[in-house]
Length: 131
Image (cartoon, rainbow, N blue to C red):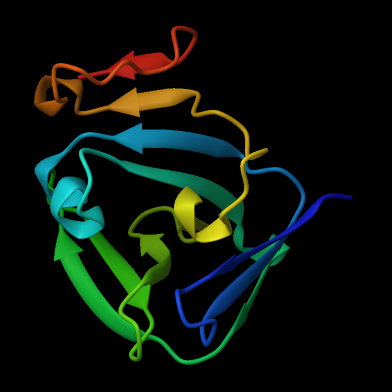
């Protein structure tokens, strides 16, 4: 069984996952662009029971474009987001793919909020394209 470790920059907050993600997606919404400091956010969704968390986190709750809440957990020392909890999907945790620092991580299969996508970004051709 595959095991991966996601970590903040200083290593204080971690998420150890067992198995493959149930979904890997990229999001081009403005909130993800601001949160990541990049032109999109990429996240992997895992079943909560397959994730072991360690360390302390600070919370930030954001209300999305459709009105649902997302609770972000980030390291109080270095500020890196390690996982988040999307409202309505309580059986899952989402983890930013960059927190794994793993070049072999699976490619995204979904691309959302493409109307806000930067013109030079090219999602994987076999990805599902939403909005």
